[in-house]
Amino acid sequence: MTRILRLSLLLVAVGGPCSCKSQRPDAAAPGLANITQAGDDVYANLRVPQDWIAKESLVSLRLPSGESLQVHLNPVMHHGTTLRLHGKGATTAGALFLTLDTLP
Image (cartoon, rainbow, N blue to C red; front, side, top):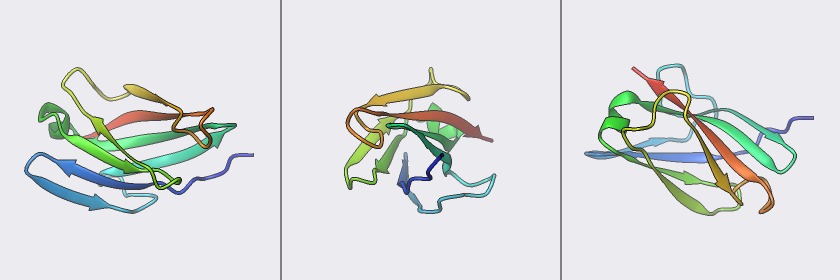
């Protein structure tokens, strides 16, 4: 059984912040999508505009535990890149897998 976790997201682009708290942003909006859990691991798509990657933006995430973390985007990343964050899953034994979904 897959359980949807509640993750909130604050996207910080170079030049100013953009807040996105929607669990299911529309196709054109930055944010998290398709959040699922398998065992201790959590999987999510991280939707960001392509220019945020080129500008090496920071993306701040707030986890269900209340912990915040920042993901630094860099130009070597592309659509489909998956980041594995050990110890950031549903439990400290799990991982958070973020798959980059670039927007035009």
